[in-house]
Length: 457
Image (cartoon, one colour):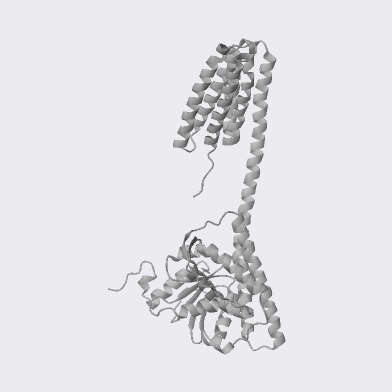
C-alpha cells in the first residue's frame, strides 16, 4: 500500500506543539521579577482554549483527510486570532509571539503552495494592523510596526520566488524523467531485437560442422554477446528499481519445486558452459515475488556460467537435434532478421518451420506456435495464438517471445497456458521451452485455456 504525506496534518501537529511552547512561555512571564501572574492569566486561559480547539481541528483532519480549502483558511484564521490576542493582551513582553505569525505564513505557503502563501500574507498583514489599532504600546512605536509589516511582506515574497523555482525545477525533472522513460522503453524493445537475432545466428553457426578454430571464434562471439545481453538487462533492471516501478506481488511458493524448475531451464546452458548443476532437495515454502526471485536466481546462474565455466563438455549433436526432429512449428515474427535467424536455428534442430511475417489470414497445422508479442498494428502474438487455436479447435502449445516486460505480458494472458520468453532469448532457453511444450498433453480442450469459449455440449 502506498502512503501519501498529509501536509495539513503535519501543520496541525506543529500548531499544537507551538501553542504548547507559547503556553509555557506566557505562563513563565508571570513569575519574572516585576511581573504579576494575574496579568498573563487571561492569555494562559486563551491559549489553553486555543490548544483545545487545535486538537479538535487536528482530529477533523484525521477523520476527513483530503484537500479542503475552507478548512485550511480556517486553520490560518485560528492561528492568527490566537497570536493576535496574545500580542494585544501581553504587550511588549508578548512581542516574541510575532515569530508565530511568521511560522504560520511560511508554514502554510511551503506546505500548500503559493496561493495559500498569498492568503496567509494578507491575513498576517491584517492581523498586524488590528494589533496596532488595539495596542497603545505599538502605537507608541510606529517604526517598529512598519518594520514588522515590511518583514511580513518581504519574507513571503522571497518564499514565493523559491517555491516557483522549485516548482519549475520539479516540472523539468519530471519531464526529463518521462523522456528518459520513453527512450529506455523504446531502446528496451529495439535493442533486444538485434541482440536476439545475433544470438540465434550464432547458434546456427554453432550447429554447423566447423573446425576447431572456427568453433573457438564462435564461442568467443557467443560469450561476448552473452556479456552484452547481461549488461543490457542489468541497466534496465537498475533503471526499473531507481524509478520505483518494481511493485512486488507476494505469493506462497514451493521453494523446492521453484528451484527444480530453474535447474531444468538452465540445464542445457550449464552443460554448454561446462558447469555442473546440482540441487539439494528442499521442502520449504516461502512468501516472495516469484518473478523477482527468478531474476535473482538467473543472475547468479548466469555469473556461474560466465566465471566458473571450464573446457566445455563434449556435445552429442545428433542426440540434441533429434529431440525436436519432426516438430512442426508455426513461427510468426514481423522482424525479418529475427524471423530468418529463428527459422534457421529451428530447422537446424530438425523442426519443420512455417515462417510468417504477419498473423493476417494465418492458417497452420503446426504442433507448436511461436509468436512475437508485437506483430505490427494488426495483431498481437496472443491474438495470433487465439486465432490459430480457434481454427484448430484445441489448445495448440504456444510460446510468446517478447521485448516488453514479462509481467506486462503475463497480465494479458489470463491463464491461456502460453509460455513466455524475454528477448534476447538464449538458444538453450528456446530449445528447453520447445521440448517442454512438446511434452504437454495432446488435444487440451480449447475451453480450458481460451477465455469466452464454451465447452462442447
